[in-house]
Length: 406
Image (cartoon, rainbow, N blue to C red; front, side, top):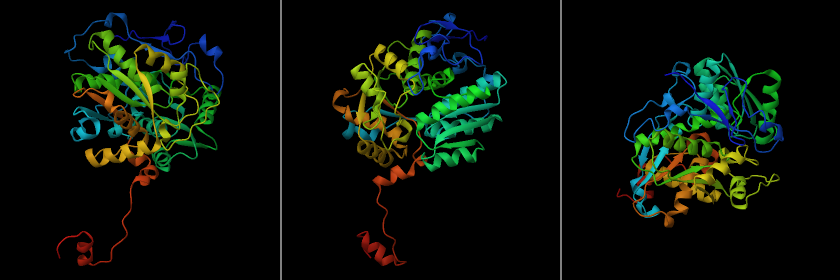
């Protein structure tokens, strides 16, 4: 099937041909300021001949709805992650229909593989072999692993304080790691300057249109896994997962595979509430400083803020806050009752579900996106576990401590 996709600007609506050099709308990006949310974010626009081309029960090939041909994708399989019915949460949630979409089973352990997979394919299609990005950790380890499978080189700008597991992943995959004595925002701006000076492809979230497009794929998977979604909870930091999910469901409506959108609820940590504040106050606080244990959603300035807020309001979604303690408690509960060990940023979505439990009708289907594996951030998980003291090699003493008959 010939690809006839184009870009459309989220700010002004102009349409553009997809080229290897075009990342932001050339008109709107003139108003961008360093360290602020991006204007002129581009979306991949589905060809009009796909409008209402499917019925809700039709089968489909996801690659037909992506702007890069299947032959360019890396050999490492991405997506097709499990959807688990969490039937043991009846008491906690007031609903028997909580479903967990666990992207920790992706090759590098996070949702970010969906974006990296498409970015890598885009790079191969256009003959680009070096990919630059900034990350708090998951996008970095993701792009490093996907690039390794495709024979590409990843150059990573990442805060030196990122969880060591994520730093180790990048180095294991053979990426060029540039730790920054600063935060994600510093790394983001430096990586853009680096790619502009070198001409290398930049994968930065929101800046590269393929990051949003890749993240829409979870919506296409979900409609094959569950007949109806009433509520969808997802963690939000920079707003690209949020934007990708919204776009995915809108694309499904466009092609006729979905009639009604779920209620989309973005969940932020109380200590990283840039999007929450903007959504509810209708203005951005550019002096905001984040502070949360959920490193993957800890951002001072959401680079996709303009687009994410606009689109979430257009689909009648909302944003809520959860505390770090609620996040860690949700993480522990998920592990104990489902066997799913997700990282804190992922657990935020489930913490949000628990917070809204009295507003979700009994029997409604609520899906939580769990976007990263817990092994990526052991230091945070340790805060909710108690290590037992070691025992001497004495079975009677062990049995006695467990209150078992000798």
